[in-house]
Length: 508
Image (cartoon, rainbow, N blue to C red; front, side, top):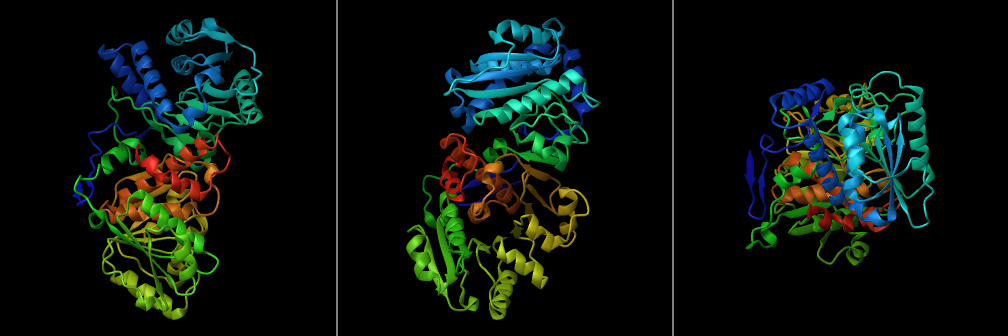
């Protein structure tokens, strides 16, 4: 499927790229066994390829600049399986000083893991005391996805120690190889001792349990490592990653100009919520909208005009019935809109029903939809947080996926359900998307306004609604990661900082 716009060319082809799908643990085991039986590649060579891909993915991530090899101690927790070899090989490839904590005597390491150890320069087995300017990169290589039962006491002790080290040093980061040790790969239920990773690097496929609501706090940020050597079936869930962005976002044509890049109209802002209008308009500019027109009430227009970026065209209205959006390539309604009068709500409803371009509804617009029972067109994107979702769909009757399906029984557009693992889905799509970027450092006001503006700009430029929602979530999460790295791994990043790094995140 492809769609052409004068400014961007979008080509969506999931079959010919190595994007990560979910699969059961046994599926990938069978695929590996089949590959090795074919004689096409030896297990050690495949491990070396995985290590090289993990190292490349880490170096490309914004956080890597905060963990330079010369100032980073790498603390590895190694079990008896191949995860230990992956962990040791990754640390060696990154050129960091190693400290390894073993779950067993080194003579009991798996063959390929022992060979990785022989190549590495092990420092010691004791817990390190960091220098003032040192950072700590913790790598969980204790248990792979094959462990599902009760943990042996020694493994549980090491997992508890790992988690304690992560908390002890604020400058630390924990990477889990394939799956956090102690997490059930199918159910996502953590054992009594379970690694809390900041980033998990699933290899070959994402084990279905890793996407369960119960697993989110242990898995952290997903950084999938593809294994194109394996033949794996495609599942129903897909994790948005940089390969998708490469399919959706293409360079601008050299002869592009503003009118070819999409004209976004925004209805946002009210007394006390001027910042929401500013944030969404400016993030739309940074995402690449050719023109941005911001409609606001006459009482806030002078203040907003003096604050918002000079490139934004501010149009004031006394009544929402006066708003003109005929030239819009996409329409965003809601950030900071407050509680309009009954006549304005009626005018807004008429505008929603008569608009044929992509329609993005966020924040207060969603509250009006829920309160008034409005039906929305198929070309709409809604972006509720959990509180807004309750007003739209009622209390959840199951997990977040089931909650999304509750709403999709009566809503035919695209749903982006915000959360630590943002979901993107629709009635018409066979695929459920999970976003892989971002983190708890985005837990503050205004991030949703930035996301809405980003999604709306992508939709205005011609990107299909489902792709625009998924791409917007990925880009904003990645922008926040860039912002966090620029602040030395700050525990909190403001929405303005996220917005400022959107152009960099679009550089992929």
